[in-house]
Amino acid sequence: MKNPVMTASGTFGYGPEYAELIDLNRLGAIVVKGISLQPVKGNPPPRTVEVSSGLINAIGLQNPGVDGFVRDYIPFLRHFETPLIVNIWGRAIEEYEQVAERFDATDGVAGLEINVSCPNIKEGSCMFSSDIEMFKRVVSAVRKKTKLPMIPKLAPDNAHIAKFARAAEECGADAISLINTIPAMAIDVETRRPILGNKTGGLSGPAIKPVAVKQVWDAARAVKIPIVGIGGIYSSSDALEFIIAGASAVAVGTANFTQPSTVLDVIDGLATYLERHRMTRVEDLVGSLKV
Image 1 (tube, rainbow, N blue to C red):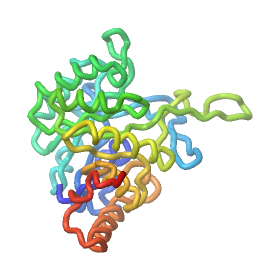
Image 2 (cartoon, one colour):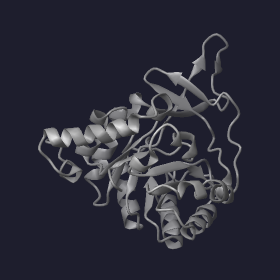
Image 3 (tube, one colour):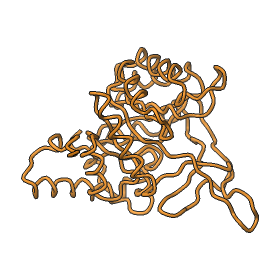
C-alpha cells in the first residue's frame, strides 16, 4: 500500500461506481463489497435510512457471487495499481473455504477481508462473531485455503474484542479490521412500523466513531498484527484518532456516499499533519496515545 487509507467494504461498490469521481490509483487499497459463493439478492426495500449523525443500512449483502465478480469486475480492477482487497462471507464454513480458494487462484487479488459478522450458519444457528470457537474455526479454515493476506473483520457489539483479536492472530490472521456496523433500528412513529424493510440494520457514520476508536485501542493492546480502523471517518483528524489509538491503516466508509473525495482528503490531510509535526512516517504515530 502506498498510503494507509482504503475504502470500507459495502460503501464503494466494486470500483467502477467511483472511478469517474476520484483517481483510484491514489488509494491505499480498494476494499470491495462482500462476495459470497452464490449471488444474493439482498433484503427488501427500504434498505437505508438516515438518522442523527449516521446511516442505518440493511442491504442484505447483495452481490453477484464469486463467479460473477471475477467475470464482471476483476478485469476492470486489474487496470489500477491500487491493491484489491475482497471482502468475503458465507452462511457456512464450507462456503468461506470455497470463496477463499477461488480468490486465491485469481490474479489481481491482493488480500481477503473475512466478514465474520454474517447471519446464522448451519452449525447450531450460531453467529461466527459471538462464539469464539466458531470464530476460530472459520478463520483457521480460510487460512488453510489461501496464501493471500487474511483480515478478519470483527463485530462491533463485542465486549471481548481483545479475546477475539488474539484468537484471530493465533489462527493465522495477517491483520484485523474493526469495526463493522452496529445493530440498530429506526421506527416511523406515525405508522408505528420499522422504516427498514428488514426491520433492523447496521448503524454507521460519525455516531459510531467513539465506539470504534475504543475497540481499536483495546484490540491494539492485545495483538501484534496490524489493525485497520473503521467507523465514522470523515476527515484526516478522524483517521488520526484511529492511528494514534493503534490502527496501522484506516478505511473510509459512509462518507463515500455524501462526499466521494473524502478518502483523498484524508490522504492529503495525513501528509499535511506529518509535515506539520516534522514526522516522516505514519508508522511513528501508530499507537502513540499518551495515557
